Length: 353
Ligand code: OGA
Ligand code: NI
Image 1 (cartoon, rainbow, N blue to C red):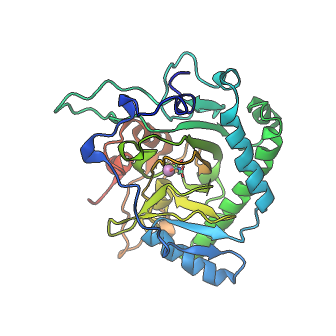
Image 2 (spheres, rainbow, N blue to C red):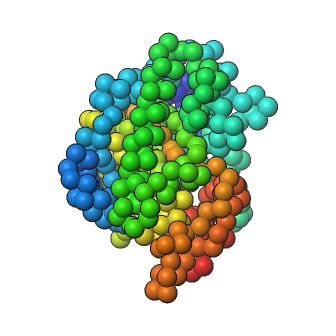
């Protein structure tokens, strides 16, 4: 467990070598807060919300929602139990580390059983070598598990400690799933897709992911998560503190403002494909800070194995398909193995460059 950043960060006052980002890849934590990133009030007339969601999804692939129906108490309780999980003694967490896989990177198992992900330690990249491996270990620990369908067996596989984890997270998972499907339906209305279009095979899994980014002695030399798009359909993230950055269409980066009670909606690559690029996937990253630990809780809705393709109704002579049909499982293989480019997983399926 020495490899858990959370067990090391309080003891060190400099950043161990493997976490140090090469100079040319460093990012500034100091980007402006994106006050123009839409914060959408879901109690306003739905036509307004639809318009704002479609616009934000095209420009950023990311937006925030407020007055979304998930109670602030439940949100606070969910964040609290996830934070407490990381504060548990090592003995309570170690059982969630896969023994036979040794050091595993962030790749959920097919059955989505609970897993504490230890960042893989890569051998330093040789100059000029052309591997797909990332060069730096991210300054974070991650815990995740499935929560749909929410069976008794699933819940019993979750942590026993903190004591209220199972109760709080099952309620939170149901609420976030409901909200995700509601937001997806608003997208459908805006695009002319039938309501419920995403409610079947596109959304048959849900993963609850807690990232814990301990305070870092030298934020400039580390990264929480390097720039990426989520491989899912949609991700709803609760963030307590700033640290999440999003890339605007023109390439500029902005901080996503932490707003109490708000949820950050991040469109995933699958949403981009199915909407034939009408909605983009949010390009985002996470930076570290030297003053406080940061915990985020994300609920990722993804497909089960099915054919992923642009919705037929969005295709016509002036809107040719941008992607060919593909198997979700095959795509996932690319998503986890090739991190050389943000959209590397879609590359084999792109019909235009
Ligand atoms: C992710 C992610 C953002 C955050 O889980 O893919 O980007 O704020 N999380 O931790
Ligand atoms: Ni992400």
